[in-house]
Amino acid sequence: MEVEVTDANFKEEVLDSNLPVLVDFWAVWCAPCSMVAPVVEEIAKEYEGKLKVCKLNVDEAAAAASEYGIMSIPTLAIFKNGQIVEKIIGAVPKTALEEKIKPHI
Image (tube, rainbow, N blue to C red; front, side, top):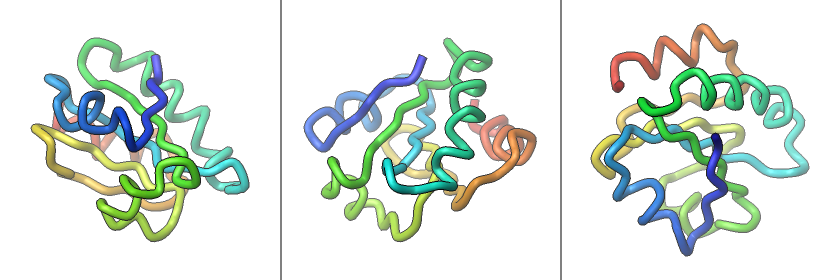
């Protein structure tokens, strides 16, 4: 299950999470974001209970995107204990994404 995050709930949902969190920084107008969305959904289902998956629309949550230096989208960031431990920029295949996630769960 994916959680929609905003500037208002970012701390609660991402930074304070007991689980590692994959945050998908995306926007409606971003074509590569649409390409990576199904992969992120699969990851959310397969890693349920081990990894929390959140989606953050950069147009609606500009403060969080700016605070974490999100310059291009899609950016997939893995947070652990409130810190970014991995950043994947661009639409990547599922295998590449899993390689980045596995060391953190």
